[in-house]
Amino acid sequence: MSSFYVTLPTLEDVKSFSRLANQHDCEIDVCTGRYVVNAKSIMGLFSIDREGPIKVEFHGSDSQCDAFRQGLGALVVQPS
Image (tube, rainbow, N blue to C red; front, side, top):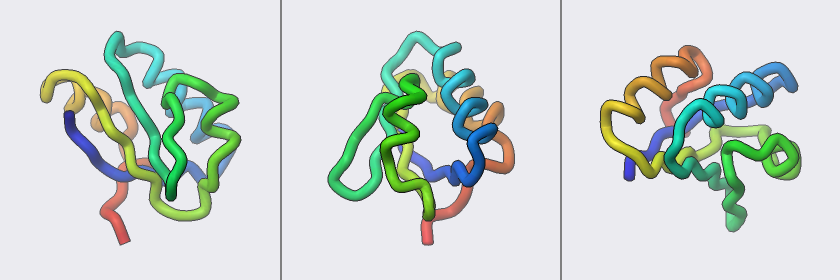
């Protein structure tokens, strides 16, 4: 498992994130506070607090994770 942080400030960012997550056949979780939601679920992503950095837990190979992070581009941030 690999983890990193993203920001999803706009609805378009949420849609892009979910669309990219759905292109991978492994589990991807989004964690904020005590809540963990499936990154492939738009409804789940809309239900969490997206104000600050959000932790992503990627349950796949390192190469898959690198491709996912690269696809996210500027949405990937350093934790505060």
